Structures are given as C-alpha cells and as structure tokens.
Length: 342
Image 1: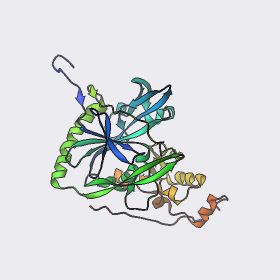
Image 2: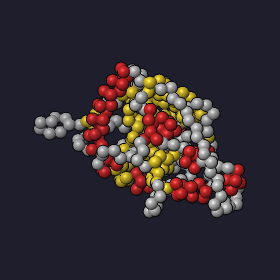
Image 3: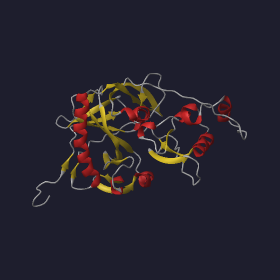
Image 4: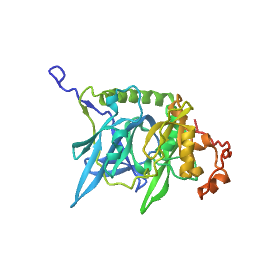
C-alpha cells in the first residue's frame, strides 16, 4: 500500500477449495459460514496448474491442544521463477520455524506435517478451483480396473494430455497402512476439450498466472487463503526412500522421480539398476520408479519396467537371497500402453 496505490495486495482468484479426505474417499469443500465439510464429486475438471506444493498439517500438543502447521506454496520444479520462489517458510501457530528449499529442510519437518500438492483446475461451471492433496491422494497402489491410481500416477500417464481434455475421479481403491484404513482416488480422462472449454480455461489460467507471478515473485503483499487443517490418515508416501544421487561419469542420465521424498533428481541407468538390485525390488516396485530422459518434456514420464525390463525368474530367486552372476542377462523388453479417450 502506498499514497497512490491504496491497496496493492493480490487476492487469490480461486473461488472453490477442495481437500481430499482419504478416510472418507471423497473431496470436500469447507463451508466457512456453516462450519461444515461438504462432499464434492469431482466428475469433471480441467487441469490448469499442477506445479505447486506446500507443507501443512496438525500435531497433538497434549492436553487437548493442537498445533497447526502451514507454509507458503512453491513450485515443485523450476520454470522461470527466481530462486526465492522455491523457498518454503513453514509456520507453527503463525510463527516461522523452518525456512529454506524443500530438499534442505525436509528432514527437519515435524512428524504429522505433510507434503501437500496444490492443483488448480477449472470446474464444469467454469469456476477456478484448488485441489489440496497429500498422503493417500498421491500414492499409487495395485488396481485391477482402468485408470490412474493417485495423482502421481495420473501425472505419469496423462501429463501430456492435460491441455487437451477433461478428467474425472472415477473410482476409489481401499488401502491399509498399519491399522489405518483409507481410500485412494482413481482418475482418468473424459473427453477432448471443446473450443468454448479451451477459451474459458485460457481466461482462467491467464488470471491465475498473473496472481501466481506476484505471489511467487514476492512483488507485492499477497492475500492467501489458509484452509483449516484437520488430522488425516497416515501418509501413504512413507515408503522406503529410493533416492539415487547422480554420479560424475558421462553415462546417459535420466530424471528420476523419488516418490519417497517427492522430488526429482538426475541419475544414470546403472545407478538406478544398482538401487533395484540392492533393494531386491520386484516387478511392481520397479514399475513405480518413474523416469524420463533428460531434455524430454513433462509428458514423458514412464514406468521403470520400460527402462529396466521385466524381472525374470532368476531375479525373483534373488529376492529370496543369493547373488547374480556377472554378465547375467536378466532384462527383457516390456511395454504397456493405456489409451485416453482423446
């Protein structure tokens, strides 16, 4: 605010805020006036921006007192933003307790505070909405039906189609972690966008990006709506860390998605193969290792089996112990393709 600019604050143009509830198996929208959560069917949406994340959660402080944690939103991977746009400031009860890039502070994040994905979408009535997803909404598990299980699976299979068609949540899958039972959303494509839908989506995204340019760049004070955080199911991403550090050799490297740490890193095929061998991963685990060639676009994420091949009986024997003879050929080609309706 200044003498000539009476109010320079930028207000988030989003009109609807949805949050995934894994314990219930649906998205909800919080009604501030009635102070209730309203279930929402996500039977149509167009993806506008899916490159944002934040940290949020709630912990029990004892004696009936709970501590609320939340941070600003940052880009998951670099685009044209300044380095400062990747800095997370995590607050506990409105006091900043951690500050830095996610890769630098993630080991210090309190238990119960979750990596939370923020996705902006266009709804069926051309409204700008925000999806908040963590834990079970992100993870991929075994599923016999047709579709993408969890948001990361949808990104892997359909990222290149986000600008071409509409999507929907079509099902849920029951899952269990310890004593906690929860549901994982299943997404898939609906149909190609019409000229009118493209026009409306373009208008909404232009308004959104104008806001995000200011919000991420820190050009002026930003009014960001802070959503109420409630205790949720245990994170389904607490699986063993499969991180691979890039070596200094000249072998071709790939971009590797580490689902355990929710971040990208560069690695060679040999490095990832060593990870597979050291951890004795089976076919299902190998296919969850998402990768793409360096220089490719975001629509080129692929499953691990495409790069490393399906494991043979010899490898399955190794999972039960033993060793692999030097020079043994354990890989064979495998490819599986799902076709969207557009």
